[in-house]
Length: 271
Length: 308
Image 1 (cartoon, each protein chain N blue to C red):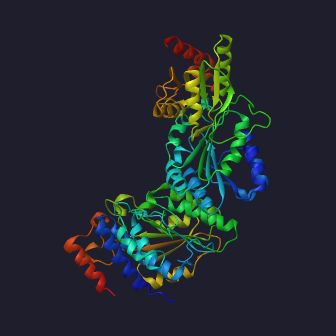
Image 2: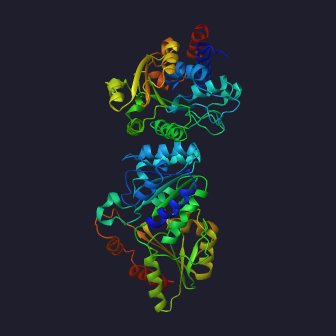
Image 3: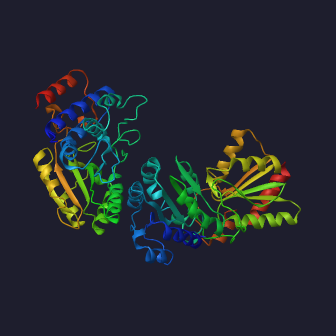
């Protein structure tokens, strides 16, 4: 079955807008910046089976930037892992669907995250296990740019290169804005590509909203045999809603009232 | 204690390919045999405990039984959030091993004094906390941790009273071991400091004070029945730990007594009370210096008994 990943991404954005609006939760900008990446991963790249979420040969996906969890919940629901109606429980009293992604009671979520810098170390262990088991599946970890401040990531980056884990893929959602200001103003990551390369990874930079570019990069994995792969995806925070794009504000703000209506209108017409 | 545990674990790992050791670049001479014999079950993560613990979780999510290994606070406090969020929350069989409980590395300074670990680790949800009190218990902990689902913490001590296991004795998780019967007071302990407790019980015995000695090797889940029985039958409860008195074994025992409404005639916690242990020295010296040695334990028991 061919998935229209552009339509999947559009639907996920609409779900995420509704979920964060209903619950009054933050991070819609962070969700929108990575929606295209996960839509292509789930729609075209990863070997997954919603009817058997723990299928041993599945590719593993970890959202290390757990604050964008609504995007993963929405994607999983759209892919058939659970009923779309459950999305309205997000961030509500008594719900399993926490603001930061959680695995408990939610089919398809491999790892609960929320504190930054945890996903890549766990993904490294999964990739190492796959190598030891001579298994063919891959481990995809999506990180935020701000989370690359965390030292634990660099421990993993060093380890996974040393152990030649070419089944491990880190995708950095490089939207250039973190919690209080731009990445440049906070803790500059540049020269970012060179840093990963210096640590022994093979790196490609792509436009993180260009579905063909995402798919083509993933088709080329591993970029170099014997090296873990990093995709630095240049993205726009808040992508898809004009007034949310490229602002710190929408890291936190939840769309309500006329803002919600305006955002929904843009997403619905943006086919 | 450490060597007995590793010997026990190595035997199990030879038969069970799921078992892995992931070390934070420590274990010179200790892990060599394991690494040589079972290279696919051994990883040196380097001096990087956060990745060590997160990676251990990843391996365990894929079906491995993983033991992380380092000294003192490095395998616990340095990567506490990885233990909590990654390992405990996902309920994986990751077992955090800390060698050098208490003052095992006393001369190295406060960075190497593991004196809050029991309190901190036992506060985590979904974790088993073991602090074996002798070589036999340490060896038994290997099997127990492999067989117990979920996260385990194992505090190993350089000191040990040797082997207190009796022939045909079976080690049971969460069951206190009675090492000496007595009816006048109960000394409850966890860790190699049992050697001081046994020496204290002997001195008390010479004064016709018969102390019950319990090894509370499982700090969590604590054997509450043994605690309540001790309070009811001996009246006096004294806990002894090479650890702060805040929230460790003594705290756990107090919680059980108060919640069950059982008031012993007297209750006292022997442990560290004031500030950091900035004075250094051997484990033996520091126990004396900070009031954890047999003589001080005896004094505390006598003082408690004289006041009530």
